[in-house]
Amino acid sequence: MALRKITEYPAKVLNEVGDPVEVFDEELARLCEDMFETMYAEEGVGLAAPQIGLSLRLFVMDCAGIKLVAANPEIVAAEGEQGGEEGCLSVGKIHSPLKRAERATLRAQDVRGEWYEREAAGLAARCFQHETDHCDGLLFINRLTPLKRNMVTKRFQKLKKWE
Ligand SMILES: [Zn+2]
Image (cartoon, rainbow, N blue to C red; front, side):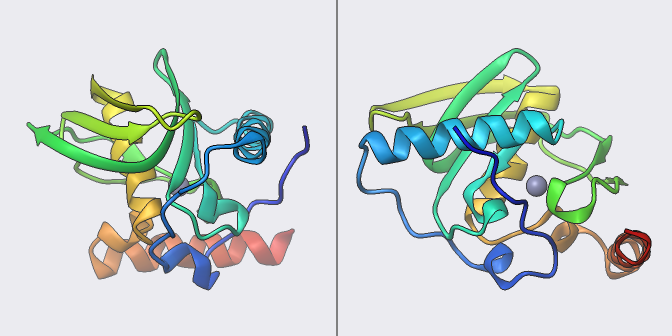
């Protein structure tokens, strides 16, 4: 296993629609292990392939008791609304309030290519939505109002200067 470097805003790969995962082999399994290891090292609850520079529709998560690999993910149902803050390892973990669906159903393939559906509420549902967005080339800041997005990116740029 190996730690991967986190790709940060404004890297182009973060705003590209990922390629579908087509081969479910040892290499993919190793990539997923690396992604879990990197996510835990960064104290994240989810990590998508574009966040380590790979334009692929793939994410891993371990959030609110739900641990999974999601290849070719899709949100097939969503209902309700939740408030709360959202942040991202690719944007320096700076948080901002963002409304999301309270419940969401994820449809994806596991590391062996088996399709599954998983329903979640609250934080895990937020994670489904956030990580699936990554696979579609969307960062959470792309869903903020221009004013809030500016606040987050300015704070992030300041953070980078101090590093
Ligand atoms: Zn993220």
